[in-house]
Image (cartoon, rainbow, N blue to C red; front, top):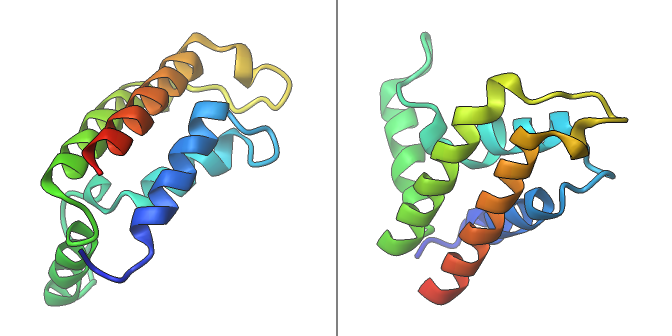
Length: 118
């Protein structure tokens, strides 16, 4: 596995999602996953970005995980992506939302599977 820190960062973020960490909040939990940590969320190279750089980044990110771990992350991402557009961002109510509850449970499952894959 690669020496990049995505492996530990993903595990920390999954824990924050499983806890629905209020100190981080809903917007940051979403952007942390989709914009910063889960590279496969970006399915194609953005316009104006060098393709070879994007391809290398995807390969290097993937090299941080075993095949089993990649499958666990993909399964979690599927759940998160199914709910993300309807997740409330209101700091007073987001933790009671059923969509966030589904993301929380999927994160807990991912954490357990991630640990057993190690």
